[in-house]
Image (tube, rainbow, N blue to C red):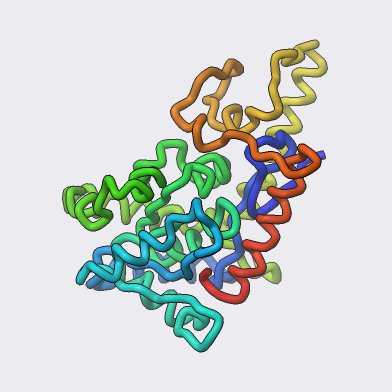
Length: 292
């Protein structure tokens, strides 16, 4: 059975990631086109921004370092999310910040993914990811395989070991490349949003349409393989994330540069799937409350 979830387990072949719902649910194509035009014309005074809270209890979290770098930069806008009153808990404040930023930092939360990544794309802000599990292996139906077209990737270890300045890394990207990346981000908006269920977009495919088409295509190929007697006996479920990255017609996997990011964790019972699902559930709850 295939499961459509906002965060898929990298080690489960039946999980398929679909975008988190955002605040925008258009009823007509024209509403989407108007929104995209608005995002193109906005003045973006901040080089980069971050909305979130540190994770002092998580020794592997890089959020503390990211917040420190943002505070030290005059080009960064920060919305700190605490348990008390904060603009971070206001959707309009968060979206305004994203809409005035060129790049939006998207480190891990309680799990790999964040709804904030989709809010930033909706705002025309280029996401900066620090772990491939935050988007690249998750939403292969909805996002381009060539992640450099729409995002920036800075490995977590580079932040953790203080090997890189986020500001310097982003300033090195030529203005014409930034412009092209932002246009790519804005072009992705239709396939990452969920249209008003009481209506249907005419010429555009929303996230639901993309997911349904992908599932139908997957089932069709599976049936064809069964009819033609093809069976992938070498399939390794723990490497499910690698199969998701294969191009059309490819079946073989091997060593990958992202292998260190996906060493399979074990809970007390030796089962990683339940712990991964629970982390994703907690992340969703936190994203509902704020941009943690």
